[in-house]
Image (cartoon, rainbow, N blue to C red; front, side, top):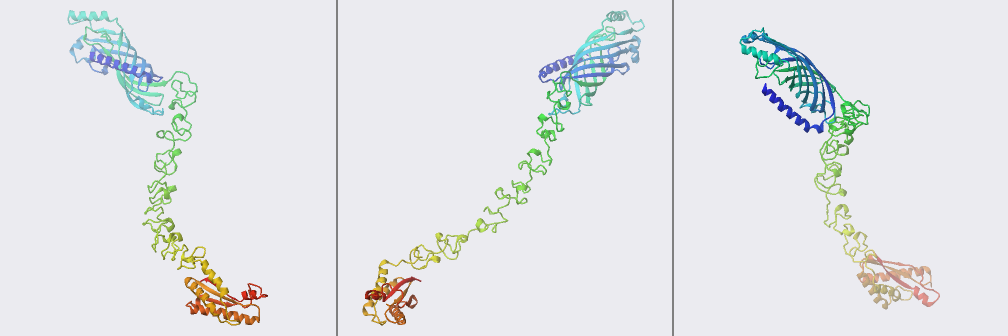
Length: 555
């Protein structure tokens, strides 16, 4: 008995200290309760056990307690019951039968108790929603107990005078009807809903007196009497206080006191009805689970729809919720090759040779090339340093500045445009050499110095030196031909003049041929009296009109 008292005091002290330390976290929630069960006496007139079925009586009670947080509550309770004990219920003990004591007493208890529900915090989720729970709890308290025993002290025949004296002492002390009590016990509680709960509890009451039964020194003076209450509890939670928004949740407990809300969400609204308060809901107008902060995840890929680029198709976090079948980091809807791993710069298509051209467009997919060559390498067939796709003469070595075409004579004019590809010339003259000024003077001088016998096509001996110079010029300008044109004055028959002019041009041509000039390089014609260069009315004019002209012409 003393050990139970010691334990109860220690537990009470521990819970009171713990309650003080958690006061700052307490919430204002009230609970009214009723108790229906039994009361049971333990003392001098029963065999010492934890519970004596023969002396079980009806008990009831009421309570009012305040929950400071989901785990702790302090309450004031009243319990009423009946205590009884009778030696005759234990007649197998000869000494009890001979003593033949019995008693009955009402028991009324008014006590303040501290209650600890270790799993109470699990009734509420982080978002404030309520979960039904089946939880154990412990309680310890302190209060007053009121009793008034009616004791029968046997038949008045006692074994000796000393025992009779002890009986008389108990009779004289039986007027004490109040004692201090320290209820301590445990129970289980089940939440019917957020307001109502049903429980079962059992508690011991050491009252610090040995006179609950009116028997002390005539019984067991070393141990005090005690009693128990056990039975069903029914609790109802409610709150006192102002309710500004009229939602049934008092301002003291209302997390949203100015906006009507739900009791299950501590007074906060939930527009989309998903059980997540709007102020904690990242998607207050779209229903979603609490673990996703109230946002929906239609495709179930763990990425909420507002942040999911593909909300209807499951994808990965790295792809913002979109699928990437080939795992190349390019989402399928942007991947031109969704079933082949590729690279982002090529819209997800592969490039095996790394030349920047997709395999599907690359005619040489395993050999790095260039786009201009359809993915194949640049070849240089003629080895002139100009790749074939840019070489206009891919089979003949040439120069880069001429797009791979040659300039055989190196005069800066490519062969295809060089009128004299084997002779160094000038760009302005189409690649052919310019006629030197002194050579042109010889040709001009020949017009005056080539002379013939009168009315004949026979050269005068003085004409041959100048023709020799013309032949020399032709030998030095192999890319040129020569055009010889014969003319006469207007004296005589025009037809005869035509024939004479042709004959004289032919005479000059034959002379040049005799000097080694190729016949194919010589062109000659007679034009008779046409194209005069001076007036035929004077002798000097007629002399100028009788002439043979020499002109170098590029082949």
